[in-house]
Image (tube, rainbow, N blue to C red; front, side, top):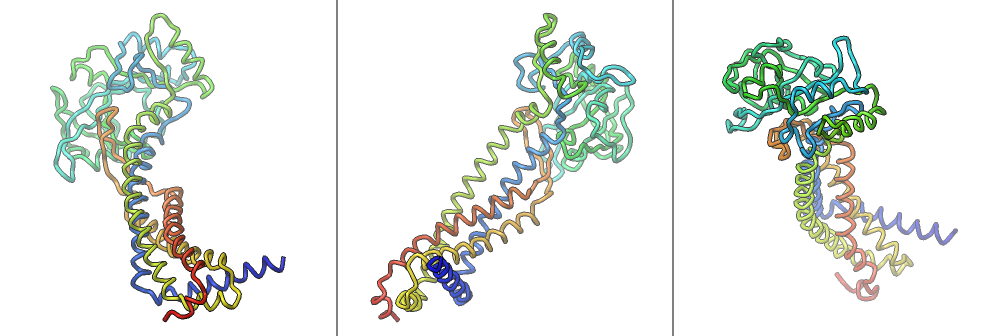
Length: 399
């Protein structure tokens, strides 16, 4: 026990001595700090894009809501359901019922071109035709400006995200959609979900505008309970009148977000990794400078009985402290600059824009700081070993 306490005391004394002299090397210390801060800021900022996109795609998903598509379709764009089919689905056992009947909305999904507010370039914006139960199926929706469109009229409501990103979506604006002109009468929110990237109208009015006849692309159904999903799915997929597939709403949105989130995460990690290599060399330079400037002091301490292992650990702890300070600085900058920043990107699986807010979450901040710690440990390892292996007699002769 006495030996362990002596060993820990040596580490504490050496670490305290090292940290006291950090600001004697202002130039190299600042370079390492800001290098690591930059790496962490980039990593957290890029990953917050993927996190925000994933949040927008999945936050509205409810486990008691099922989406019914044509069998083999991987998205609403690729699906197609006839009117009689949608009625069979709505009346199927397991669908919750409200005052007006089954809580199932047969929906039409088309894409229109609108210019972005920031660049003026055209982008694909989803236009969704819905039936009255849609607002009970997705009960998170709330009109925050204007009013709900009137059924049977050329009126639309716009998601808050789409209204911020695209021109011509203010309340009172006119849209040329298909062969008709439509009036924007309201703006809605949906807890930051994907619906906020869409424009909604009456499906019965949208169908003739696009010459779709009595056809839809999906049915959104509120089930009696989350546990009713499997039985509901089995009834639909075994019904000889139907050729459909059934997925839970959260699972569908999670799958739809996979391509973009994997791409952003992969690119962000690659960029941060390349920058991290540079930061490691910066940390190496800083710690080699620190060791070189204290050669005689370290040798003196070794001559007084301090062991090589405490020297290694103390240098590593000094490098770790520097990296954690730099990582915390970078994570804080990323949070201040990017958390809540709004943008839009294309969802390649639906070929339409998704408006979302960057999400700098606590998990991302911790991930960034841990990455900084790895940089610090990598940058401090070789200088620490050099300090411990330095011959005492030789070091004492250095000036």
